[in-house]
Image (tube, rainbow, N blue to C red; front, side):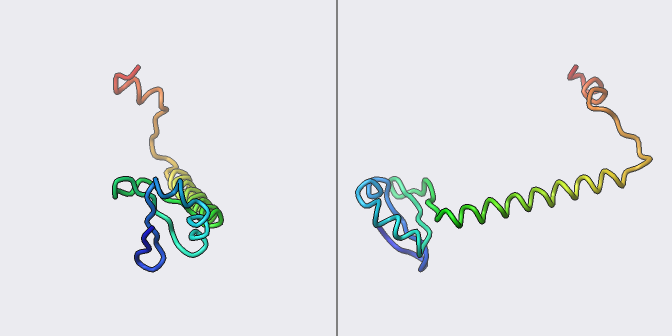
Length: 93
């Protein structure tokens, strides 16, 4: 197990099997990056940090979808085509 950049710990997959309890303790103070043959293959996150990331992604998705809906609503009077018509024109139907 190697700690780099202060709050990041590199752990080999084989070491994960042997030192699970110690590695789980490391999650409280650092990020844990799993490596296999010295290449990163995964990340272990504290569950609270995972929840925070998921909440951020949900908020960003809501913002993007809201922005798209607002743009579409502002297109009043502009010609739009139903999906079936576009598929037909492109030869997909």
